[in-house]
Image (cartoon, rainbow, N blue to C red; front, side, top):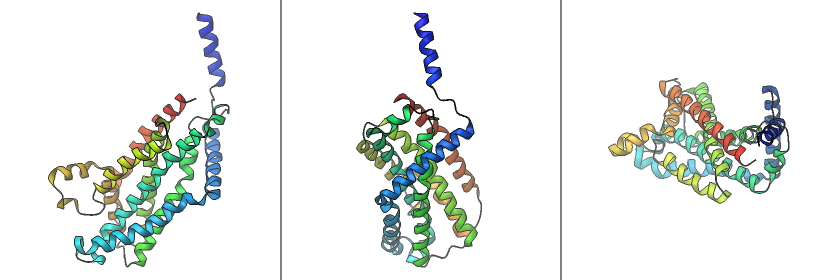
Length: 272
């Protein structure tokens, strides 16, 4: 019995890929290129990050501007950073759905026989998805500027808010990556992701000042990671200041990656 166990252990040791950091980076970039090629051949994957910023920015600004801040111009410093956060959250939500679809189609079955790092098939698409976050964040800012938004932080402040939005989107995408590895279907991933996205985005300070909310809701908003990102982006874009909220937002992004990236790899290994 012990001999069988020993032989099995030796087989697993031989088949388990052992890659250096350089190899892992190279494999991740290769799979990122695969995802970019897939996006190029399926341009409909960009519809949400192109249409949504245009639609949401104009719709929320003109509908709620007068009611919330008295005018559209006064509402823009509040809503544009909020739309940035919501757009990033919605864009990264697609990560889990696409991952689950690839797993259901058997794409990941081919990766099983390859001597590659187990994180590469997950990190590659996550890296490629950055281009979607860049498009979404850039279009949101451009639409805001076209509508009359004039950020007080200047170019440097806008660049900082833009960068933080992309970092936050990439970090939150690991939550949906993990969901993609544990759910049984792409439809299930999409349904669960929507249940996560709506409370995080709408029960935050993205659209209104949290002080106008009931006390119990203010408590949720206070601990909502999206609220920290929105506040940090406002500080950067409107005031050009690197405040404590910027640090907390970056720290929150680091915590999310530190928790959900290992969970995603662990769950992915179970399917091998």
